Length: 279
Image (cartoon, rainbow, N blue to C red; front, side, top):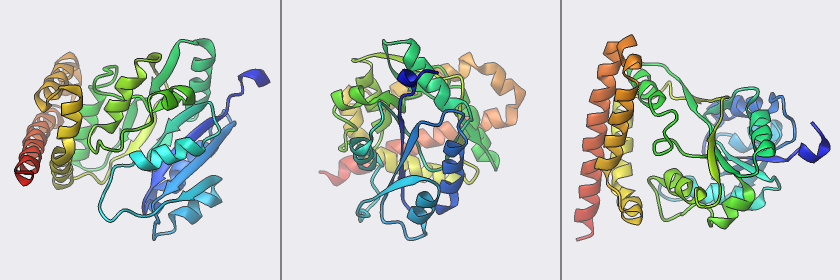
């Protein structure tokens, strides 16, 4: 690869008490076959040594104040992107690991196609218990559907044109910015994957998560004139298209349906709770 094509890739990782996961994440970046990478870790005043670990593994650590209440990582991602020197941005989570050839593929794709503006990297889940297996099967069914997957890799010029992440959106921020990317370039899919560790996912954690999402989801729905029903319909359509995956493990398949119904109910309660609190 010529020096002209050795684009700098900025990998931006928001963290908050992420010591258990961050080392594996950073090692996977260091082990990439493509080496022209900068690592930017935007840490919310972690108390478990996250920043120290990140520095040891080549990360540039930017410390930001820890919010009093939970907020999505949009603000941290925007801060990291503003400091990034790379032409290509990859917004990664601390509990993810890159397959070895992923960054090389990303750079090659942008070098070969000038119309390409952003890339979706499929998440291959690392599972533990039953409900994590259900969530993994559900998400595997969404591969290739850019209404259910969102681009985390983008040209920095396009990221700046869309105005960064909308920090007013707490649920659906990835889908929101993905929609805006489409106005400035084509969206592609990577063959290499990113491994996402969801081994500690439980039914209770997932239901609580969807309830909290529901409490803030109305901002996204109003902005895009969409509803939870339209998203669920799209998801169930993807299950039908991938019915063979359900047939391979019918028990997990049944668990997917149960989990999805309960998630929808929890999200709806969250939306209702939020609406009543504003009255």
